[in-house]
Amino acid sequence: MASAASNGHLEVVQYLYTAALTLAGRKRKRGESFCYPCKLDMDDVVTKAAEKGHRNVVQWVCTHSTVNSTKDAMVSAAGNGHFPVIQWLHENRPRENFRSEMLDAAARSGDLSLLKWLIRHGLGEGYSTLAVNNAARGGRVHVLRWLLDNESLDQNNECSVPMEAMSLALIGGHFHALLFVYYEFKTGAINP
Image (tube, rainbow, N blue to C red; front, top):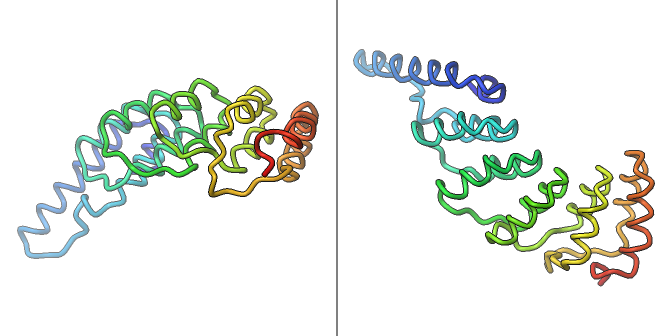
């Protein structure tokens, strides 16, 4: 079911879920044990759909089955820049505690409007060095600039000159990001 969700095949997810319900009902009537669909890992199904931006699958699974947590789904969606999925989950699911995971993942996507929206809606307590690393790895200088200018560093994370960020920028072939991190973060707001 998770593979179907990951590929956006809502009809297949619906069919498999319905088939599992039907089979569970038959086995229950005969007194046999069966892994009832509610015990299937529907959290994983939602996460796989969210990771690929399949909001229709996320919506259906969340409304028709038991989903315990959408935290991983939201972080996966943020990491891939799937703003509509995050908005829907935020508006329709119970609020969960995201320390820096959401902002760190969103920095990887390079979607600055998403980062700003997450901060505005309280979906993170500041970013960690991982956000800097993620942005540098992708050569996302505009995100690095915004992170530096907004001083949103999670105070529970220690961050000095991010050598790892420079290495990741270099490995990714983003020399401009490496130079930005070296010159700006060396004396910037993130340095303790």
